[in-house]
Length: 111
Image (cartoon, rainbow, N blue to C red; front, side, top):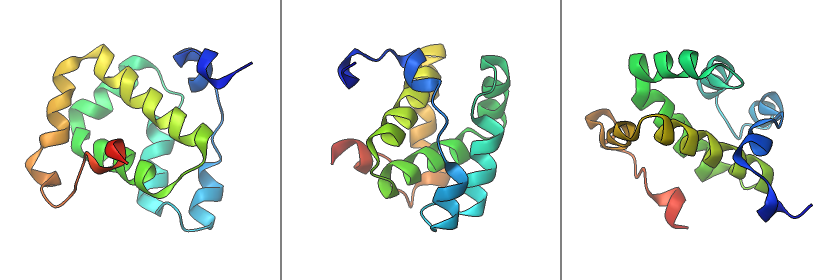
């Protein structure tokens, strides 16, 4: 099956080796903790996490997209972001949160 034919649901069924990325220092321990809390959870649970600390999750997504180039992982993170914004388009504001002023939150999407 071609990658272009994969649905968001199929992409989100993947198991991404987050621990391997941490052991090779591609992600931090904090990023791993956030991913473990968020990854493969119910939409309700994810919504609660985003309501409590949305900017931290946006920062985590941006860091993963900036630092990891494996196609399956990039597709997975983009699907998570798509799901997050589809569920509540107002979450786009999280990318403009003042706590992210030192981050270029759009850079990974433009390269």
